[in-house]
Image 1 (cartoon, rainbow, N blue to C red):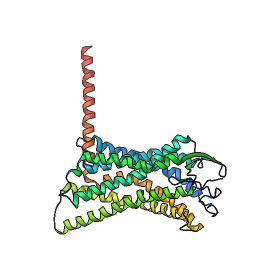
Image 2: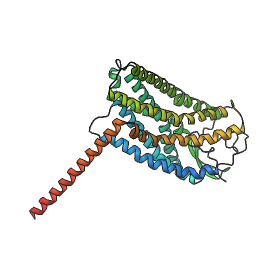
Image 3: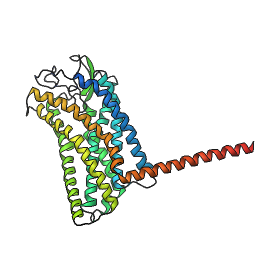
Image 4: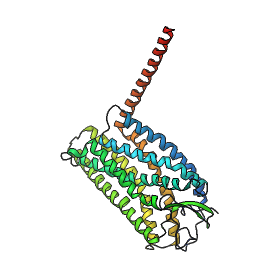
Length: 351
């Protein structure tokens, strides 16, 4: 029997205890049109994993090994790249799981660890985007009052706090993810086992508010204010520092890409919670939400590949840093080779 992806999806996978024979906790018949999606998922996952690892490692090398220290914005972007890299390293396990018809072969520890890594990306990346938005807001809307808030050491502290907060939001994954044999599907599945439908709804509601409503509201507010400030500066022919303007252009593109990639997933997740709470009803709506949940999940994953490409395409300062990094690396490599050659020549002379 082929297990529907909606039964064991990436983030909100649960098995309803009130209706164990249904995939969505209702009396709706299971949807049988999953084969086309299941057959293409592993290939897509492995593709974005390979691209994401290469591109995000490249971004981190440019930011961390460049001769100049990172700016506040670059500190946030480098942490975003780390978050994306964590996600990319977790995806191969789910590719194997899907190829294995959702029969989890990696044991209980990796079930929790892999899903923790995925949730850390979902929860952490949105708050790194929040930090980036606030930084640009302070730089352009309140440039005279930013003071100490935009120092690199405070940016690093903020990133540490955000990693901790992202972990707290991901705790339900650590606590409730289990590996159990499901006789109705004849698989040993890795899924969220709340054992209580009311607890599930409460936790899902809290995650929607803390992981979507609040951060997206902050991001949208800052983005609107930043855009208004740029328009006013253009009308008044007021010129901020070029570096700030270039950084802001890149950040706005990154913000837009994030919203396009992740907002649909969070909207569908909200609809799924409303369906579980029976505030919305309909078998057809369940099927649509299940399919959109899968499609928009992969749209969100693609953001981890898109970010590094945006840095290269839009980020003029990043391209400059990348060129300087490669030049610096080339000089070091040439110097190492010359040193090795001179040592060999000295040894031959001694002989």
